[in-house]
Structure formats: C-alpha cells, structure tokens
Length: 254
Image 1: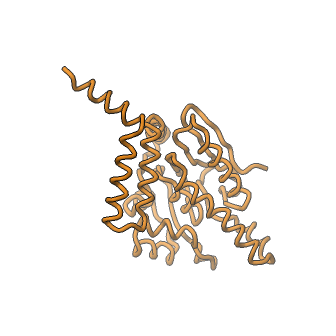
Image 2: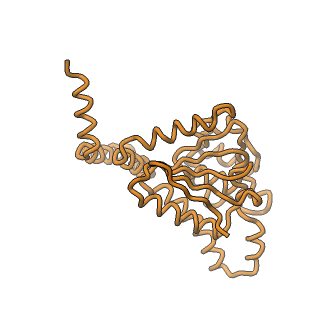
Image 3: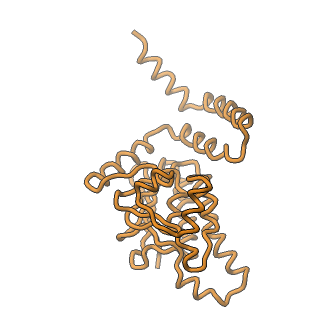
C-alpha cells in the first residue's frame, strides 16, 4: 500500500503523507516513496513549488518503531541502508532547485520534526507541536541533528534533543524551527497565498537563490562574498533577470 498521495495543481506539486492510522510514521517504504516523488516533481518543469503535507491530525510522529522492531535481528548493513534512505530524502530537499514548503498540523516529532525542518519553509498551524523525544526510547536523533543545529543553534538544539520536551508552534518559531505560525481561522487561505506567491516567482532566480543559500554552509566571510559575487553575475545573465529589469525600467519611464 502506498504511503503518499502526490498531486500537481498548476505550478504547485503536493506530497501528502498518507498513513494517518500510524500518525504518518516513517519507514523505509515511506522514505523511498518520498524520494521518488521529490525526483518526479523536481524534474517537472511545470512545477515551481513543492508542498509537503499530511493526512490526519498529525504531521508525522517520527520513525515507525514497529518497523524498527522487526529489523532488530537484521545486520548492520540493513540498518545502514534503512537510515540512508531517509538521509537521501533530506539531502534532496536541500539540493532540489525548487522551494519545498512543510505544512504542519498537529504533532511533528522526532524524524517528523526533522522532515519538516529539512524543508525550506515551515508553515505551522497555531496548534502544532514539535519535539525530538528519541532519547526517551533509547534512540538518537542522529541525522536530524545536522539540520536542527543549523536552525536553532547549539544550546537550544541540545536542550531539545537531551530533554525530549515538546514545544509549541510559537516557541518553535521563536527558536528558528518554524517560518510562520498561522491561526486556525485562516490557515488554509494563508498557506495557499504563500505557496502561490512562491510558485509565481521567477523560477530561475528562486532556484539560484536556494542553491546559494545552502551553498554558504561552511564558507568563511570572504568565501561567502566571493561566491555571492559569482552568483550575482550568473543571475544577471538569466532571462528572468533581463525580463524583470525591462519591466521595471518601463514602469519608471514618464
């Protein structure tokens, strides 16, 4: 049985986690289907923005612990391949040249919080909660830690993963885990407006922006400025830029 629903409407591709009876828990099949969906939408020239949402009351409760229990007797190679399947999804979300937007309702826990954090933008329902409770079951938030440290800094990140505490959408936004918190009354409308805004932006400029944004990781100040200068020149030579400049100049003429 498939773990996802993938739809395309206009310039927006939507991937919906579809295991509400399991709180959309992540297993190997889910990771592989996510990878396939991202690859397809990433290659579709008509798609300019990708949404990651979920069925049911919760976004994602993390790893499917029952699936992990069934793997207890497996060798290290099988466990590594299982972990790498989800790791590949995280990498693809960062490298795909289209904005990926997480729409979070309910609980986003452990790998589910990491899945949301791997997206470029996180839009959280006012009632959403986030947490990294892995240590409470003897597990380690291993791959998601890389993104968490970048988003919230060392002290806050370690507090979250060591305590396993859950935080509100508002606190998550204050920390840097969430981009925007949206109230229940206008949640769907605001999400639609934000996503459509991304989907109507010049795709080449948005793609180059995303590539540079994550490409700055690990660079010192001078290297970042140098890479920015090269990217600036690259952007000037795109059709998006040329058309945008002409439209702006035409509006300024008397």
